[in-house]
Amino acid sequence: MIYLDNSATTFPKPTAVRKAMNDAVTQYGANPGRSGHSMSIRASEEIFRCRSEAASMFGVSSPDNVVFTLNCTHAINIVLKGLLRKGDHVVISDMEHNAVVRPLYALKERGISYSVAKISEDDPDETLASFRDSLKDNTKLVVCTHVSNVWGIRLPIERITALCHQYGAEVLIDASQSAGMLPLSMGDIGIDYLCTSGHKGLYSPMGVGMLITSKGGRLNTFIEGGTGSNSAMFEQPDIMPDRFESGTQNLPAIVGLRAGIKFVTSITPEKIHAHEIMLLQNLYDRLAENKRVILYTPRPDMLHSGGVLSFNIKDADSEVTADYLNTRYGIAVRAGLHCAPLAHKHFGTEKQGTVRVSPSYFTSIRDMAVLSQAINSYK
Image 1 (cartoon, rainbow, N blue to C red):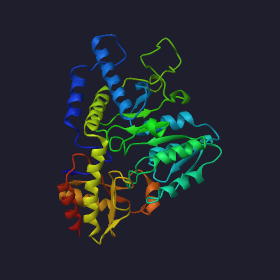
Image 2 (image 1 turned 45 degrees about the horizontal axis):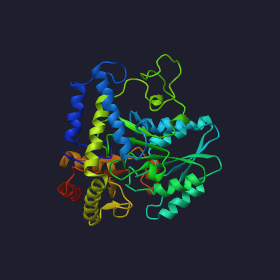
Image 3 (image 1 turned 30 degrees about the vertical axis):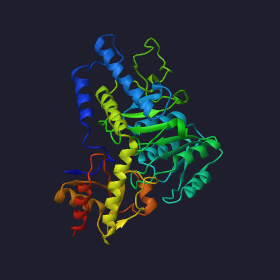
Image 4 (image 1 turned 180 degrees about the vertical axis):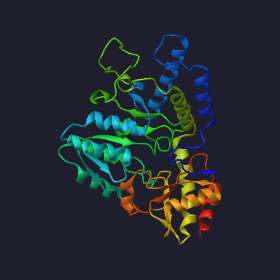
């Protein structure tokens, strides 16, 4: 199979990730932080090493600011439901995933409102103006994806963050489609809350994500329980990251995440990004020659794009196209709305959906050639 669905989850995983997970369940598979014996201590040390690797990668001062979650959706919900109060207003972009939109829609019942800023795919100044116009006196939080999971559009998060801080609003960045693929320093940009998955650009297994913040004390919890710390207290601990890590952690996945982070940093996100953009430029140029193919965004480039390209074949349902590629050629892509209806509304594809191609570090030029040939043969 030619696997081009890496925006959903990367495959294959690096050998180091698979080995690390195997070691976790065969050599030190005890419950971390719950016992004083040597195997439990070893498990706790491995988790702390992952926190340290993540803190270094994303430019935060303390490993304690790294909270392990189930996934990015879990991390986003922690912030939205822990920070927002009745009367608060939120601004989001029209590229946001349902991981953002659905929690905010549910929070409307608690008296929380939100506005949608329109993104310009080729004019960052216009994007910034849309965010500025959406801000209100009661805007408490701005939520912005770094890279659209549908269109690969890279949002100017540095400028958006600076603007929102001028107006007293905090900023949450959804880095699911950029972590590991783009350089990202919370300290340099000033991000208040960074949420990301591990199983995409960080090449970890599924089942682990991260919320990274130095402002955890401002967030109410919505899950309480055992943390292995302050066990005599009935109150949930205030200390980070224990405050948000109730229950047994997913040790194999966290150990796999650490190996994935090390894999990415050894290559560098810059080189991974350059490789993916090169592949998508190659594919874009091939598809642009086919008059039946609809391309919605400008040609991918290093400055404005992440590793995602969506297209359609005229008069063909996106799901039918994806099934054709899978059954006839063994090519795995994703079709439909990609859990991001706002992003589809932006380009008018909410009925047809799109066929989405997302390469990884392991994707080759030959894969792009086979895909384009398969599309050209579509009847």
